[in-house]
Length: 209
Ligand code: GAR
Image (tube, protein in one colour):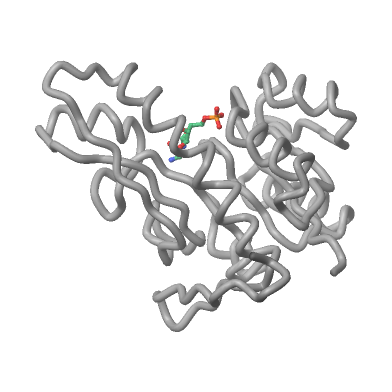
């Protein structure tokens, strides 16, 4: 099977990007990270890319007069690397419908709550302030809304009565590092199918078990 070319967009630490790179190195994901792009020149994800000799670059929003030109530059870089799957890993920008239409059902995101609960910023803090007893994380395809796209995988994490946003985030992050590589692997195996907003997951073929 030919390897699926993955492009990662990330704004910060990049621990999810790292989990995906580790899973590829372990031979679990039939894919290759063709490029990592950050919108933040000091993002730790760029250091990770350099260490592992993954092509990487920074494309800053401030270098462009408007969002459309910024996104044109992102899309051009992804297309230049032949990217077939765009993985948002802590990319803290809302992408426009125009950008999304360039990669239909080929953009994934991870969000630190059980969507549709607690979309947007500080999902872990929102869960605590709401008094939720369970939160978790969601991998979904990206659509035009904010954290509204078709759900691929979710996993629950219990919220303790004395949790802070910090320690809940850490526990959810551990789960994210397993869930995101699994979703990317399913995509690379061609096992994800969208029927309107329902994502069907094909059973594993014999050789994939
Ligand atoms: C992760 O917790 C991810 O779920 C969250 O940002 C963090 C990035 O961490 N994403 C969002 O909140 C997107 N709405 P990382 O840079 O270490 O992967």
